[in-house]
Image (tube, rainbow, N blue to C red):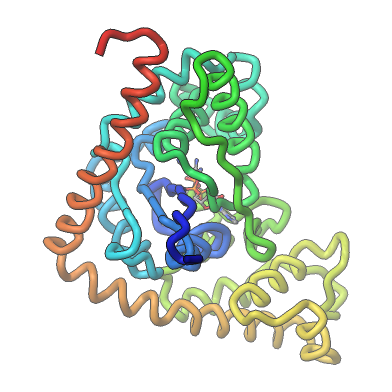
Length: 333
Ligand code: ATP
Ligand code: LTN
């Protein structure tokens, strides 16, 4: 009887704005993989989101296919989960427009990611950058998702999604399921190896701060060996030791060891040994992912087959929600 219970729905997405980072993987994608058996999972490449920042067309095309193959290589199984490309499913743009009219200027002005990104791209503070969380809210609400696995930086966007959904439901009845964020205990906020007070990001200017899941073992080792730490040379987790805390959290996430165990294992050893151990553990963890990726990219036809199939199903599911919302609002459909 138990397994006849309807599975809860999981939705999440990632921008193909560059190569997938260790932060994306530990904060989000790894959980997507883990949730595939227990939940009915729907994942997307949020390519519509990426044009809030200027993209070079040929590079963007390449990034989309590479990101799709990378996520599959991380363990997203297209037989179990739906994995589609956002721009191929027109419901996303439609829902974003509708929800824009149920979102207040004031609440969008409070989004910290908007503040950060508009400071970073001061020459292009476009309306899309401002309404980005509304597109994201639509992504989630279209699929009536119960849970949304994301890194800690997306917490505020999940909250605004719930606010918009409650507001809409308050006006028109139960149209949207109210989702819940699902943020991992370990790896929710991987920091830059060069500035451990800032999150590791695909678009970091300092390439040494960010580990990409497809970096070669040599590159990964070099980046970890150069990671910024403090001058104490004692491996333990403590306030103010941002660099070491970050390395411990990465090490713990890939080995499964507790902080206590790590402190014990590295007692009397210096930071050099620890950095090497973290680098090696990450290299080993990523090795099978890189092998699968190298196999997958050889067959672009297969990749296309996978996303086309998923795009079609996603369109069917999401159109139902668009129609329901439009009917309630008063459109003649
Ligand atoms: P960009 O640099 O283009 O803003 P990003 O690297 O921040 O991109 P997104 O595509 O915006 O990545 O995020 C995809 C997922 O990865 C989200 O769930 C996000 O919370 C998670 N994520 C991103 N960076 C980190 C990080 N440093 N630590 C943990 N999770 C992260
Ligand atoms: N904004 C997200 C990417 C994203 C997303 C979503 C995440 C777009 N749509 C829906 C979860 C659910 C980000 O990580 N920057």
